[in-house]
Length: 531
Ligand SMILES: N[C@@H](Cc1ccc(O)cc1)C(=O)O
Image (cartoon, rainbow, N blue to C red; front, top):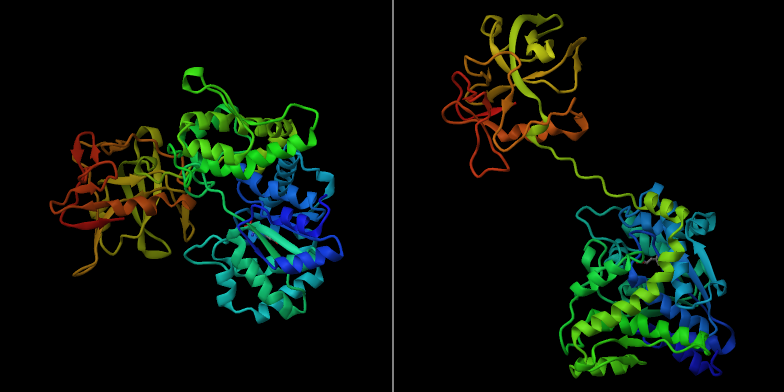
């Protein structure tokens, strides 16, 4: 630990973008050991960006500070349920493992740190009461503003996003810290805490802010853009591949994610390692290249690397290779640490592969020809018919209930061919189970009219309806929750000639559904909807 308070203070604040309440922190440090905390909400899979704050924790420890890492599980939930309640425990466990692995890799002694899970104290009576006390004095405006850069901004924001900054402010009191550390994206929450903690009678804390390190494509490091972020467990090949795609312009040192990350992580991590292994050969940033392109370089400081790159003495390809090798050397031990059946199982449960989105397309509906063999008025509802419909050799006869009695007479229906959605989920209409749906055209104006769709004369019971561009793949039974019919039926209509057409997402113009090679029609309605 450095001798003087000023030296220790310099170590705590070096490389930070901004510090609020520096003098206060210094005066505390002159009296006793200070305590600093950093919090993370266990949401998406941690990526290499997590190395950045860890490097600072090393500085804090070396300056003699007590350091707490908070796993803010409740915050992960409050922030638009980025983690569901079920996932939270698992993700918190996973975060704990990998954060400890990162710290170990860069040579931070984890036995000197305190690890806390938010829900362990944030549900206690006193804390809860303080949340309410804050809610009673914080304006909606201030709460919203505080979270604007941290809480995901959505169209119809939930109340939980407003509560988020309140809890983060209270954490400073309950973790008994003198300063909170975070990225500059936390700034508005930090100033919010400075304003409101004193109003509850608590001490205003100091705030230490790291610069943000961007993604590899030159913008923000985002979990949703796979190429912009490197997962902590990516293989060496994957890491090299992503770095190859990274934005890195010759001579450009201003917008250069590789240089930025080298400065924030690679060099500090190598420095720590060299400090802890005084007897071993020093670890350096190595540029390996053939003699004719300048030969091998061992670079000890970031400034040296940056100067050489600015002078175009290091080519982007060589910088990328050197960076990839350095990064892989940091990630190797993390991957090894997590390469146990337990961690792999944990990971699979905490971050399950996304279920493919449900395709609501017409191929899932079993449309076919039926022949109505018998019609009776529903015994308990005169607006409905109970029909017996022959759906051909494969499906046989079915009972189907249709609410068309006001528009069609039993005589008009008996013996006729119709078009049936045969795989709708059976449902009961006042005691009579219906096993299908007859497709009909409807108009509302000038007077409501309904006509059933009619296949051509040659169609037989059981014949299939086909639609160009779609291979029939009907579900055994449509799941009402997937709302396939609701989503697809509006794309059917009757055109100006009285022919059934389908507005296919796979064709430029409407297509005609066919039975064998023939169109489906209605007797008299034109430009009508289909239901
Ligand atoms: N707001 C932090 C997480 C956090 C939550 C609660 C805290 O007390 C501190 C930090 C983030 O964006 O990652």
